[in-house]
Length: 329
Image (cartoon, rainbow, N blue to C red; front, side, top):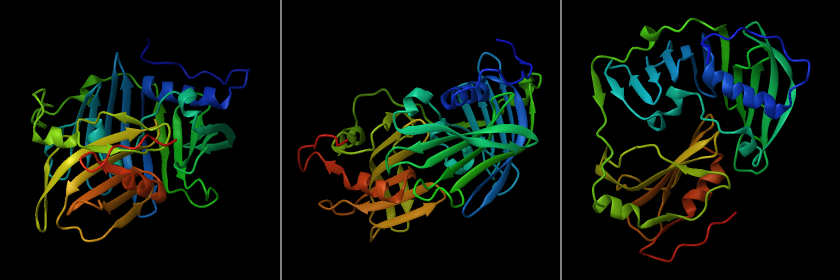
């Protein structure tokens, strides 16, 4: 595959909305580009420099220019992140919080079309480039509305807005917009050099089931929205220190529909006293007491409307207390 692809004029045959979306996913992965984008939700704004390349695998470098000075380097499946301390860590992409990674994982447009209406919603101009707007409007109440502005010449994403599907005329819950972008830059592997000193997470154990993995199997999530599948994040079970001592994580699992992701944690949290719902942009955090277990709390965190996150938390069952219910549609 060539490293530099010349920008070609728009084809005479109009592309469908699904074609545009597929072209965006391919171009964003396989083209070389560098630029600066601005990300904002309803509470904060950040500017980020990005360099992306493709040479048998994807390379990417992100540098946060405002807020906490995060640096991220991705080399294929390798991912390194450094925060304010300057210490580099090798982690799995599923372990990055949204306010660091920004960019969502996308699947096939045909798969997404089962749960979103994909349509063209006009044109605009971003970073000095003509763009076509593609909208993904959810067919249920458990997702957000996603709107992409795609460069008509290169297929690259220039802007990404996420809206409350019930209030699409209001300001977006989150927005990512390029203010400058250069396409088809020569590949320079030195830009993506791995840090020399790296703190690595312990490898995922392949040992026989331990007490924690046995406890993990004793919980069941009986309902998630259709289209959300389990994904592997390699996030290890660990202890969390709270104001009142140790918090023991009994269960964790992540799910994604290709655009949005959420995680479920079941913990022993003596520090929590009442159910809570928090929101920042598209991110919702629900902390829900499990009825029949003292100090056991269910946390759902991710890109979901609040009512959906509460329904997921309420569906969790202890298999030691009752038989699991069949999944709902």
